[in-house]
Length: 101
Image (tube, rainbow, N blue to C red; front, side, top):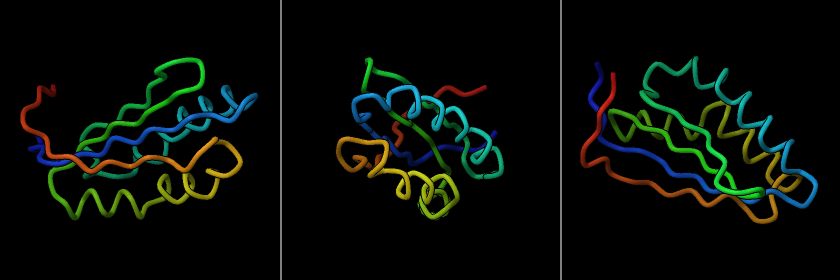
């Protein structure tokens, strides 16, 4: 099992009428991150009818940066003005403790 040291928390708010399109976009994002061996954990969640978040974890800063520059990160930024009421909030974080299978 890979050690996890850093992560990302990405918050997005769907534009009115785009809620299900955002949910589908995030579901399809799983296929893209499956191709990233250094993305140790990845979760897309719905916080409310219009609010969504992504949490992902990585063993190193360079793995996190590779993910940000990867296909999902690019797709997120390309679709931002169409899907989200404001630009995505992307927070870099340090993982203090974790439990993974």
